[in-house]
Length: 188
Image (cartoon, rainbow, N blue to C red; front, side, top):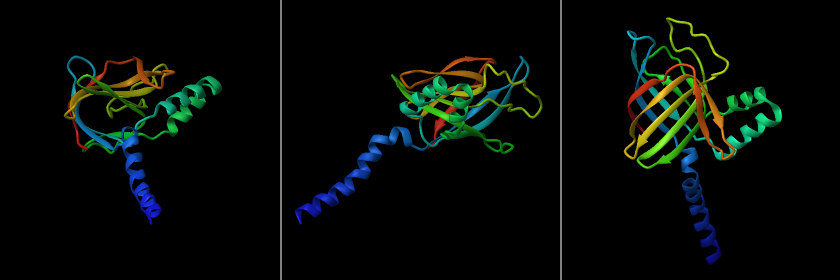
């Protein structure tokens, strides 16, 4: 009888421990912000966006991407990155566009945390046709969030990333100035 109680207790506790240990990687989070975009001194556009992070990129996943790059080259690295689905970005009330996020990391800071999100670079404007620059193939979003789930950020439409041997993701450069994200709020 005592052995059955231990098994029941262990069965009940194991999912809770697993959830506690992996909450940082597998937490579903949603954010909303206002995006101020545009080019030139006289043109700015304001739209509301939603960002959903289904799970975060682990250190092991980043190291695996680095190894893929070194062993198999850039094309295999890009293929492996594209297979990762970490969330998405979409305009609210927009034209139905959605950008898949292939990498997402959250790093604690003194006042909250810094989140970096990576997707494929693409043209957001229906009015213009931005030329793709192969040196900056990624869309990178950087969010600074305080302990209350509020903050600001920047969206880089054409950027590059660096994956470190320690398993972190960094923005390493960009082609066009970032668009500002203001009024950032975490919904979940």
